[in-house]
Amino acid sequence: MMRAESIWNAIGALVVILPLLYFAFRSPWLVAVGAVPSALSVLIVMAAWWAVAALVGAFVGRKAAVAPAIGRLLADAKAATMMPEHRPGATILNRLWPLLLLTVATGAIAFLAPQVPGMAAGFAIIWALAWRRQESAVAAIEERDAVRFYVDKTSPLSPIQLVRTPGFGGTFLAQP
Image (cartoon, rainbow, N blue to C red):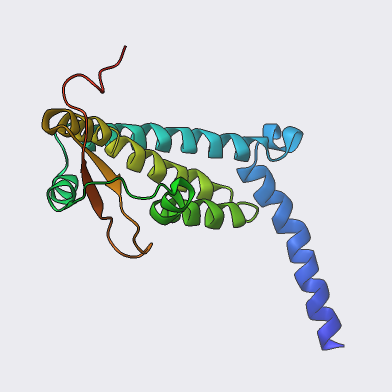
């Protein structure tokens, strides 16, 4: 008998308290349209985060000079007389596996927490904008020294190694 009475007391308290809490903290707008304000707030927060990420990435990648890590990589390149074997698919998978892992992992939990892929996209924006000028710095060095750099075959967990081959000098890389 005691158990049934405590259950009815709990239900009675919930019946009284829940409507009071609902009307105190919820608006008629939320009652009318359901979860749209929640989704809208996620979109607003994600858009703000992407804007901040774009600013951070643009600030980090603002220099036209080559990054120190890329400079060391170019200086340590092995000299070769022939081009290495081209394996674009393997090279992309070997070098961009962190981005692939980030995409798959955040996509897998997107159904549980849709904010996580949005936050991860912001970090990918920072990464992309921070590295955006490195290709032009490498192209300038190739043009100046009349050489070409190619990515050598390495393990995905080991650092990138480059091969330096003789190339064309002058304005070979100039855009038409």
